[in-house]
Length: 126
Image 1: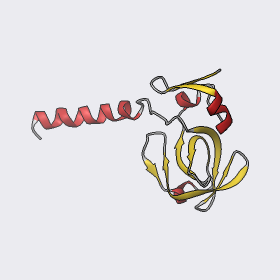
Image 2 (image 1 turned 90 degrees about the horizontal axis):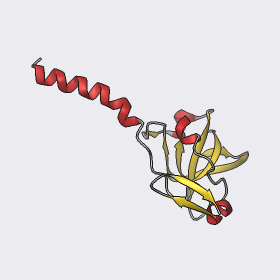
Image 3 (image 1 turned 135 degrees about the vertical axis):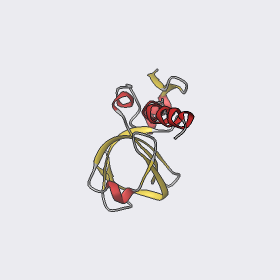
């Protein structure tokens, strides 16, 4: 193996964990909640039985897509968005650093009455 290929391989190995911890930018309409995955498309969100929208996307803590079937039976703190019919459209499983950002709206009413800094990913109640 040439030295340049070895150095490139080492750089990739050490940069992957750092890249995975970059700040994720959540949309302004993302709410915080607790989710329990059931048999797709069934989930329990904040204690209420709801459904995932067709084509719903679930991203893990490294921002990689997860299949909902693989998550059945698991619980997690999440950010999520709803589609126009009220089904859960996008889900992000939160890392501890993301969960520590408080406050974060849990209802659409809170989101409408608070201010959002999209760059810092911080909400401020008015």
